[in-house]
Amino acid sequence: MIAVVVAAATAHENAVGITLLEKVADDTGAVKKALVDQSFTNAVVAHGEKVGIEVEAEERDPAQTGFVPQAKRWIVELVRDYEYQLRTAESRVYWAMTAMIPRRPTGAAAPTWHTA
Image (cartoon, rainbow, N blue to C red; front, side, top):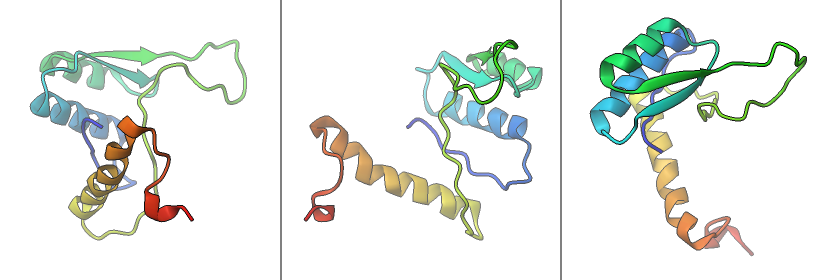
């Protein structure tokens, strides 16, 4: 995980995308390209250029109908949460990741206290 941006449901995804690009650019210089879906506007692409991240929109094949998973996209997790502070919700994401990241090198699927 590189960055987390938590926003109200009323926030436009382009504003969130710009905020996320800004945060990624400030926190790391290693990200050079971001893949987004076609709903992001030119404002996100322009902001990516401004902060040194190429933003490429993954466009859907117009011949396909119905739900078709795209090969490459931003990986996001949408959750319903009732926190009063956005910072609190963001901290919960980081807290959850501290439980998951140490298991990745070992291939463990769940913490040992979850298994019988």
